[in-house]
Image 1 (cartoon, rainbow, N blue to C red):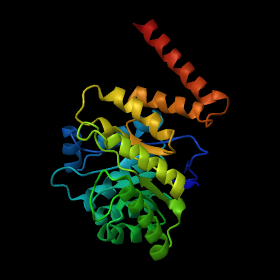
Image 2 (image 1 turned 90 degrees about the horizontal axis):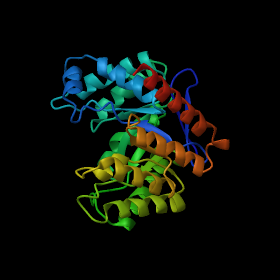
Image 3 (image 1 turned 90 degrees about the vertical axis):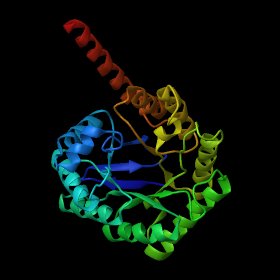
Image 4 (image 1 turned 120 degrees about the horizontal axis):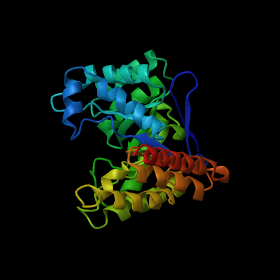
Length: 297
């Protein structure tokens, strides 16, 4: 199973179990970022451009774009952000908004700037949400993230989540002709600090989706440690567990060095980095940077 995303000029990213793990950079998001929120409100894309560059340089292959600050007119701000990013870098984008109008505005701009295949973040198996976002995926030829919950809401029931995921996949194909290859199911990563079984349920749903539904997956990995001390350690433990159960991509922060390293190491151990070439190159570059820093100190 292979999900193909594409920027412009043939910049292709393939998501799948036989490919290296795909990191979706989550930094272009104004949540808890006052300066970015202020800049977006003023129509200033300085930080957006900078974060796009930095995330790709750190190893992200896809960039999530979220412009949801308080009071935001997202259908106006989203295409501005997409345009700024596409002018600055070349990568597939994940258009992330609870507003279908904002998602459509972002998809339109992505196409206008030469982008070929974006990712929509996200639909659920709720009928109303599917009817908003699945038509956009079909019209613009985009892939889409499907959250594993329906009208019953977010819960800790493995069967309910797997059932919701299956329902979304079936509806997308039957009603809109969207193939399984263009759906990334999110098993729903919720904070382990709020519910003892939160992480276990996500892990089990991830395994079941991989084994039974056979689609690619993604998740907001850093959610697992929300509200807990020493978040990096929990995040570092969680990602390999999910990857071992078939997770093929994740929204995460590529600027966190421990995350970057754990994903590079996972690619080696899962047989997705032939002869560990990328791992060795990354290690050598790190050693060079350390030597240069020591020399200039």
